[in-house]
Image (cartoon, rainbow, N blue to C red; front, side, top):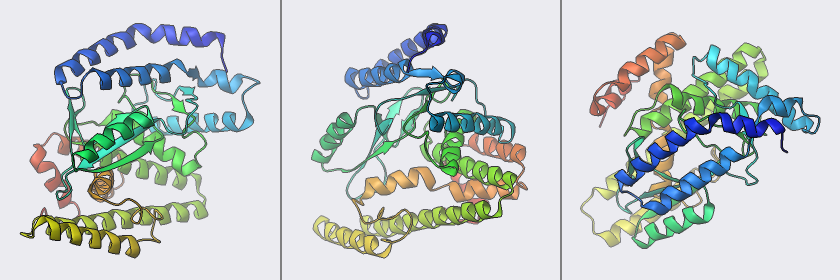
Length: 358
């Protein structure tokens, strides 16, 4: 679907976008991490996404827009307003437009680690700092890079992501890859992505992602509490309990593997015991949420993907509760913690739930 105003919509932002792109280009060259091919796939994917944007209001007003899409877009307008007013998240131009990518995922994310270490492989960039993952706009490119890492003997996990964020550098659109999500899932995704614009700390992906997940959980809870439907509230609370159980299960498995990897056993024995642990874990958690997550392709990299996005969620939720569920105090406390020395941040967060650093 095309509109005469879409060209103007893009043109008005081109100058601002171009100086960002040039800046990113220079930073990527300076980083020297992945070479020009990775940079070009990033830029091409980014501009392809931007070129497909259509202003939301134009779609809502258009007679040719399906009733389903119009309904979902109208919901996001309310969700975005709630994020700004109640959660105090910056919205800027984010989610004011919509893009149909004609594919089922926005990006594909590569995670990797050594086979007998839980520390994730990191990719470093001047703007974002070091990340525990690497994103691709093309699935085949992601798997090609993953295969190279596997050939080096690494554990690799590749997961498709429905969302794409530029951390507020650009006006990111809503995407076809998630627009038809159920209400609570769509709410969570929007709040998560906007949270990255509220707080982002270079070189601390676990805090960044755990914070965004926690904010999304807080936002979903507050939204449904505001709707006053007791059945919905019970359902959301049940989902939160499932997610907390998943976090605990991931940490339990990681502790088992950490004990094995730091033992004096030879590599052959470690590999045999690693396989036994992962097989037992797959059977033990086969029917827990999310279904079959532990029983399909479990390795260090997959565990690290969950660890990055969830390890500090209970601690950050504890901050919210100990601040009396006051969103202003919550944000101030998290911001203060984020300004602490990197080595102290997790210890401070752990103090809110009495978790030791050992």
